[in-house]
Image (cartoon, rainbow, N blue to C red; front, side, top):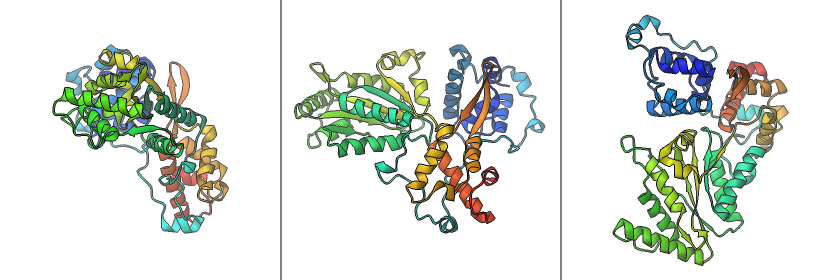
Length: 393
């Protein structure tokens, strides 16, 4: 048994809440905490990082988190034979659905010519709640006027959509901002798992964007001096510069520290570069106030979180999505189905003696569930998606 089990008990969080946070079944978490068996299909380091995020948010102290994956009693753990292993029962399993495709028969039955949850074609396709509007505006003001911002959100929360919206908005408004986006393909936080994004790579990307015709200097020191000069000249020409890094949770700690030095490039009192990092909640672990290695970054970086869609706004979100493809929500789903979607992607939990809810009502998860329910409704021959259909997915 892992010490993780006792830590969960100490902070008053059930294993089911951890399962929801990790997007795995309750049986998977039970195997993990009771027998130390890690799921084969998931990256162990990434899973541990997500567990640390959960424990931190639940109020566990640093010492407990550091030892969470140690065995309580190795001798007892070794006695756990195969007879104790259980298969997932499917009960209370809140695993998210994979990408769902709107079948041709479904399109015909509901009179749809576009997938209401497909990739956005323009800025007008983007639903904006008060929370999203705040994050959107903070990103825009950072790009226009400078700053250091970290945008955190779960997979499917809309981070990439906001990045695309920022680039589009700057272009439509003719704002004099050069957006610099280093390539993060195969980027990992250490070279054992992939290729880490280092400050030299970021500097090369910035130089390519600001002075594409300049020949890079041979030595690192000369290249950084060349970059500083190019940024000054670009600023003198009336431009600002915004460095946008996606998948920032994969940045190694040394690169995070170097970003602070990039932020300090200036002319007079004017900062030459603003920085926006976009990543999953693991980014919050690296930017924790308890992490002494990045304290200089933490003190300068503003952090905003993309929250799930509120239950009370789910109908508004769905109405907007279907309106964009020329369909009334009531023609596709009844009110009970909307409530069933909210219930399916939420789970009650108890923390510190208080009842609460863990929500996975993110746009991607909502879209996959609704599309699956629509496909099932057509297969069953019912005219609209009902609560029973959603429960049957």
